[in-house]
Image (cartoon, rainbow, N blue to C red; front, top):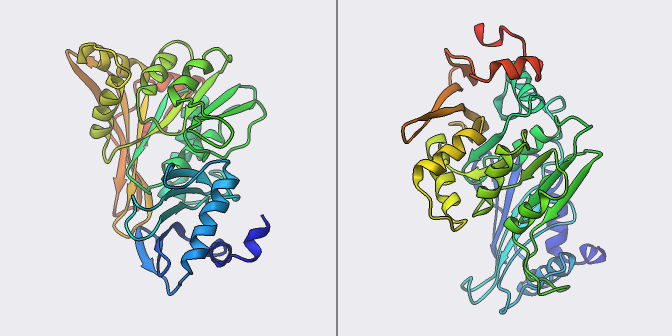
Length: 349
């Protein structure tokens, strides 16, 4: 994009791209610019002209084939390097447009090339590889900025190459290599068409595309119902992420999102569907020093009356700086060993 050579905003982003540890960039106003490093925001001594910010917004909108103006005041899109960008313009952002950029971290590609990622010891990387290979259905949960997409990308790298994978996202963020991959993006109104295709529309259509695994970048609505149905009807090994600050909240949020599909069904039926579809919930968080961590792994084990049963497989130990194994092995251990290749005595030592 030739505009990068002239616009100070582009030049600033090029410079930031060389800095390690920066996960977020926010431009609140031409003289109010912050970056996030290890969970903390740092204000930079940077200032732009308002015209430069406006031009940058229009260039990004054109790159994403979208409009960003008073009639279309909110825009989600991507930068050329794959980073995600959200823009909201005046009058809905008072005084100045607000720009938020979630950086695409090129240095985190797979478990092998990212030692210590999410404070994972090698033993637990072996577990996650086995869970993916064994076609466990996995939900990655976490709050804002804890690395849900990054962790999902790491898991996706472990999918066997002889399977057909279809990903569905609101804004393209997942980035992994696979020979038989179809990437679908839910289209909001853009320059090319007035047609709106939701994530739920795409999930329904995906079932006609002969997928082995269905991956939804993040569930936010009724598409969860269709994903759970797919998980329960032969599409084992499917994955998604969800915004939740704890595993308990994750289960509650899945119930709420299920109801957004418009089905008036008893809570017990919803919980039964969740309990038979999801194998593991991986909760992400930040440690006290701001590092992204896997805080907990729970296994969904079934139902007792109206209650979803689950057990903790591992939780983060601040003293050891990593996951600590619980005193219980997963109920799906046979699948993890026979299909996933996990050693039989993995949870015994």
